[in-house]
Length: 586
Image (cartoon, rainbow, N blue to C red; front, side):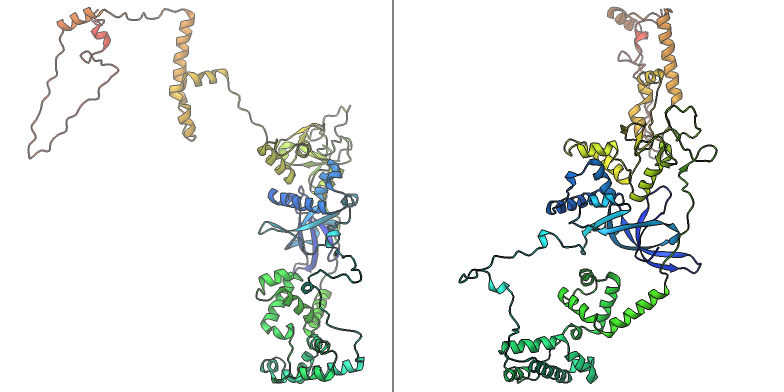
């Protein structure tokens, strides 16, 4: 594996491979090799909101392109095409080189090429957007290939002879040089030498320039830049190639003309900031301006970059980087790695060749042996791998397992994804839609029983089965149980002993009622005349209440009243009903 290779990294035995680009290969103090890599992310690694933005961007590209659109693809091709899409990031990380599992190819999405070309090639991916893991944003890659009809110039029709040009002349180009001038090439070169000499003399007179270029050689080199030559040639053109008139303009009354470019305008601290930004962002001039040089214009930064590449400073840094790269590792060899622990073996330790075939009488001890592949529903494979949570007991065949590790999804679309593609968003339940999309993004397993019809099952089912006596006790002992109050206090234990006692008493009463055992006869109410006669014979006596007068020495005592018992006393002389009926004495 070499530098700048796109490779698979394995960070988990059950999760898909990570796709990275090797930037550097470094040898640690312990002798191990680490790879500094650029991160790429899959669709399953970003949120559903960003996936919707990515789909919207892809739809806009399809509308403008003339190639195969997504509507012409089958459901299976659409499903597998999402596994080939990646998102570039500016994030770097260091990973052990021993975790490399193979090479792949990642390219910028080519709008002129059909999307089917990515499905026809193995280990091929594409990207068109840049993902920022810290800000959780998606942006279009600035390095896109600008091909297609929208980037072509609109050429107007040729004007006829005598036809007027109705275009706005201020927006058109301005002629600055005439190749058919009366001057010879030797005369033009002589005028340019005079312009350089005037520029050198002007820098000697300027205080700031003399500080930056203290020697004559540096001043002469600065005066020989393109900015001086462009000014001289423009002066010749404006004066109709009259040498005497053009020379007089080079040295006006105020002194010689001084022309400066971006190399002279920038200070040493600004140049240092630019080199630091270039080391971090590369040729991403928008980010350089935003984070390091916000007071400079984008045109000024770009112009300075191409002038900086002609200096000795650039040549010196290029030599240092070449020497540093020469001392680093250029390639690394990764030996064969151990088998995956998700590999399913039979009881004797050998992988099963025929699992779950129709007509087999062997009953395996492993419950996974006998299930069909969760992706292609195959029942025979030279090797099986457990997939998903252990409680779901799902498995994949060898081909689908390799597809899952490389592309981060199942080879065939599941039933939930087919329903999602076929159903409209307006008629679908939003809760179900979010659940299915989350499952599809995270690659969660979908249970199937060997048939194409499968049901979503993300967790183990739970069902509370209560007996008829329990249901009957809830209805009978409502006053003791108080379900609402118990629900508001889930951590307070229910007094099941009182519920059991109340239920037992009621059960005995019902049993006696159904068995026909005699019960106590109910008291019959006597007429009102008997009650009045009884009250006349036995008048009610008023209790004597001792009242004490409060004194100054002792504090006043409060009057203590007993709480009336409304259940045993009534309005008639505060006695119970049975006493007034004369039942006690009879």
